[in-house]
Image (cartoon, rainbow, N blue to C red; front, side, top):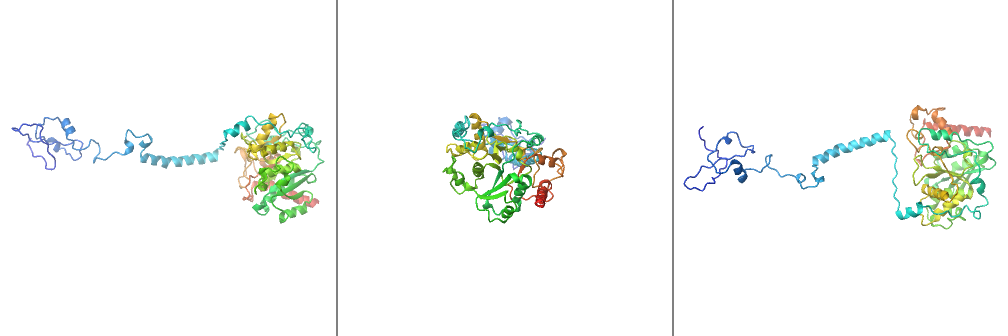
Length: 473
């Protein structure tokens, strides 16, 4: 093969030989890694260099030893000494964000419509939990004979015989067990009926006028309770005599409706809360949890939250003193609530509750935690505790998706759970006649939809019953 001159654009390297007599013609070396090296240029060698090709490449590299061309600096996240997190390349992170977040959202949406997740996370100060929860402090002595009010008969109301049992001994979370149990409770013919029962509720006048949405609570009371033996007292943080709607009902039912101002300082006189810091401040009169206990202590009777509807005569329950189960899941620190409760006048149960509230060290929250602590102190002190109504008796919306009452503010379908219909005479209608009330959970801004099951099964019947009563009069 004929020798050709090396291309002008390629570099030459001098031989490593030091002999002056024989200068070797420089050898052309091309990098096999270079994309510019053609097949033809690799054919020519002009000198016999004492360096082997590999040694020459190591000594005189034409390019950096990198498979890519042109050479580029490696990003920091490729460094073997970098942290594990830094090895994720931006494309990888973008891929995770692009596909991970939408996937997580789809899973949450699916679980929201097909499952009923429940959970509770509560943090307590250790110095508070240890002495106040485990073990419970002693009772304040309200059940002692020298301190019990003459208006309260301990032998009868704490230890006396009962005609009905309102606690099942089972949580009744599954199926329609709770509704079936409620249907077993009926008033006994021998149950005393010669006393008038006070029903109490509270309306915050600063929220506005008493509108038609809340008028349904009054209608439910007049339509379901025996008015000859019942009276509803509407308490407020302001004077309600100006309200036209309430004045109309007072004129129609003068013996069954009364309007009163809730002066918490006056109501607390003679109780452990008299002069307590809990009564100071502008929000004391608006604290419904405090008002309900003070009112029932002074007057005795049943407390019903304003955002409730009564569905049945409560007479079978009134031989017991009770609060209501918080929900069917039984929270550990808030097992009960006072949305529907009944205590007799000057009940020692409420007296013990006032002592807990007045204890500055307890820092107990009113409502569920208070009733839980009170119950624990009672059983630790050997006193039979008050009853706790099963959840469905007054708040059947607080349980599983398959057994809770449908949303009363949605039009919904004509079926409930397991194909039970929501029409008149259907399964839902039967269950509503077994329970005693329905708590609406402070959804005051919502109105009942036209054509919804609640109008068909409850509200229309209230109207029919009230019209029939006016005809009878």
